[in-house]
Image 1 (tube, rainbow, N blue to C red):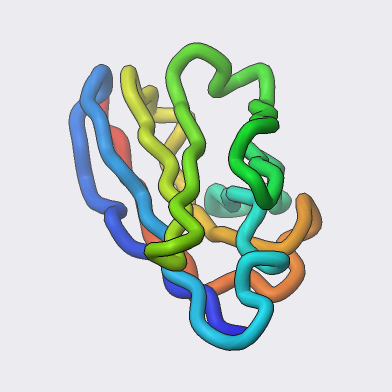
Image 2 (cartoon, rainbow, N blue to C red; image 1 turned 180 degrees about the horizontal axis):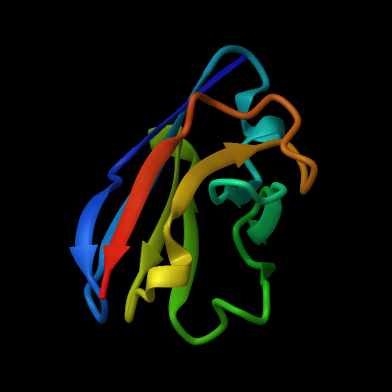
Amino acid sequence: VQLVESGGGSVQAGGSLRLSCLGHGWGYEEYMKFWVRQAPGKELEWVSSINLEGNEKHYADFVKGRFTISRDNAALRMDLQMNDLKPEDSAIYYCAKNAQGTARGPGTQVIVTS
C-alpha cells in the first residue's frame, strides 16, 4: 500500500489550503484514516481521523472548527480542508494508518506566514 500526499504550500495566516491523500494498493482504505503532522524540532502529532465509511470524524482541539476531514473511497482519496491557518500550523502533513503515523506517505509541507 502506498499513500501520497499533496496540496501543501505557503500561505499567509488566515488563509486556506486543501490537502489530499491518494491511496494505491489493495486494502489502501484501511491505511488512509489519519492525518498527522510534524513541525521542525517537534514530535509527530495527530491532527484528524475518519472512519472507513466517512461518517465518524475526530479532530485535535487545536484544529477544531478550522479543519475538515473527508474521504471519497471511490476516488481512492482523503482530504483535509484547512481554513483560518495559523503560523503554528506550519508542518509537514502526512496521511497515515494510525495516530502514530504508521505507513505514512512522504508528506506535504505547509508553511503559514504571519
